[in-house]
Length: 220
Length: 220
DNA sequence: TTAACGATTTAGTCAAGGCTAAAAATATAA
DNA sequence: TTATATTTTTAGCCTTGACTAAATCGTTAA
Ligand SMILES: [Mn+2]
Ligand SMILES: [Mn+2]
Ligand SMILES: [Mn+2]
Ligand SMILES: [Mn+2]
Picture 1 (cartoon, chains in turn yellow, cyan, blue, brown):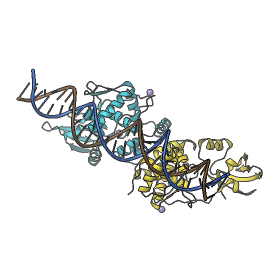
Picture 2: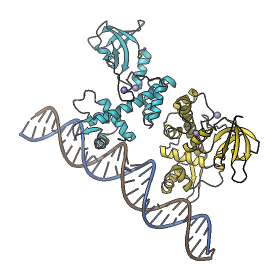
Picture 3: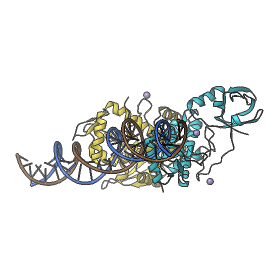
Picture 4: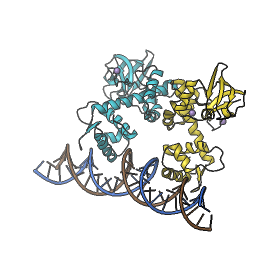
């Protein structure tokens, strides 16, 4: 069984998150930005992760996560997201406060703890940001979802997740009244700058820039 | 404000626990045994803790914890014991399973997390082993308590804590039916080997060796 | 009052995980 | 195609916290 250090676990999680499409590898600079460490430190870590065979590492080309790596990354995301649910549902944290604390809690090593937590929380399927929580086998029940900018005029849907998890963005959403679960309808789409106006829960209209809208994910 | 690393926090907690009486300092070897590290490693750490002025360190003589150190140690014990309550009360851990996990959880840095946890747990005053939980100011509501061996023949009391927190000991107590909160009466005290027989909750009699009895703490 | 023993500290080493500065490889533009 | 710019890696250094082996201090028994 492969054992990861705290730092290795953090890097692997970052690499997994950065490898959406999958064709070209994840770059050292991207990882550096995500992890807020220097590219030199990333190179060093990539060598280690390569040796442990959780990533495929070809110098000067991006890295790809391996099957084994994917399993470990999903395990980490499961822990992280369950803790986030705990913090929000049980300890009344707001969704913009959980990241830091959950990042630390995620390193606690105890499979039984995570299983019990899952059970205690009622086997939640999504975290406070709408991200899916892998089950104990690493299976993810993903929902089809689109950026709000892709919804057609007069189209309706439900906010199910956010791309940007920064506290600033999440607090902004709180302020304007956008939240996970809200039913929305697109009232206007401005061609010029990509901004949109939406109706939330048939009650409130919100005007938002394209930068905001692309980070809101909607299920039809 | 003094910042401690994880290791420093662990050592300080150990030193605090080992400095009951207070007159003579805690020895390097004692700390080494408690921490399961080598005496050479302890010496190194004592130097660091001395520099941070959380202990008073005179080479070759024991160490004493300072006022500042006591505050930090109590803060750590508060975290540790609150997590233990969480694990037992909410996640159905048994009292012999909590130590390892709580030892990791204790390092999560978030004052708000601990305050919320305290509130969520209903401001518990004692942990699953009967140890008092310091409040946010470091105040400890301690109960007078005696080893079971010190209770006189036919004397009564209530089990309120245990000295030994090893899984083996705690599981033994589970097996014979001794638990925190149990009302007991001393039915017999064997002079020869210090063993005792007690009546638990007016129902069950338990015979136990001196080694067991000294580790059970009773409130009159 | 010393010699020996045990406890403690020092010296030197290692691994993890960061950093900066410099070198090297890749990518891009002339 | 060559020159420049960007990206990535390497080299060397630092800190933390372990370790072993050797030196040193303190205490105790002869
Ligand atoms: Mn999340
Ligand atoms: Mn499954
Ligand atoms: Mn305890
Ligand atoms: Mn108080």
